[in-house]
Image: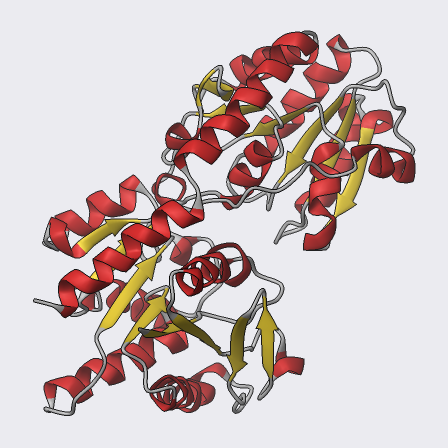
Length: 397
């Protein structure tokens, strides 16, 4: 089959295209299919109108339109629609039921209703977008919030099949009335990858080879910043020589809050802020850690998420102290990959963190078993096979 994936945004700097779409496309191509990704590169406008090849998968960036969102919407939706059909695909798979891609899918479904022959349309969802979800996190206009909430409800009812990245999203779509046979659980997965060079990163950042390194790999907004500050302060007080390596970038100045808290709470000397890291260097940064924390508030948005960052940590063999929320409980079996905590028990997470920082034998065993479990249960090739079968069922109905 020839398959077109419609991306929600460009390939940089957001992670959905690289972390979810490209690995799936690679595995489908290994199974004999041809996959093309069509993207609206408003997040990387320098790629407007160009074609990139990523891991053997062509990414066709449409030409951008006017800069104003409301004016650009019909232009980009039409260009996505045209670019997808120009590939003469056997099916189209839209990633995220919102925005420009969502509008192009709505146009395709309207054409189908008018009797115009269209390729089967599938939808992938990896977030909850409406009330209680991303609409409450991002500074969208009122009109955008209404549109995204509508698209999230309207599109799943009309596409051939829906792939969902988490068990909570699966449940929400069942509640919408989507038949179970039209749903496929498709979590974020991994390919096998060797460990990075952690010693190189420690040397670059001035971290001693024998120091205990606690990693936070994050976008910050999934948890209370005060909880993070408490955990770091407690670990600094009780674990001599510990260093806190923070990889990632916040949306609303959370890094500045962390630095200020470090001064106030006495862990400034232990804090190392790496910021946003190039994807090619991430394995080295993860390998520099002895332990990671993954705080995750118990919200609808987080219960729906399928945290790709967690899969990267587990694949690297890093043991994780994580909150037992949503999809995290699918990836971490206690003592295999990490330790699960009550998300409302802040001091409990701090205690588990200190325990593992003080027990290198246990944490190494947990990290090793976590990597093994992840590669046994969550490999892209396994789920690409399920996706291939899922495509064939609705087409053959």
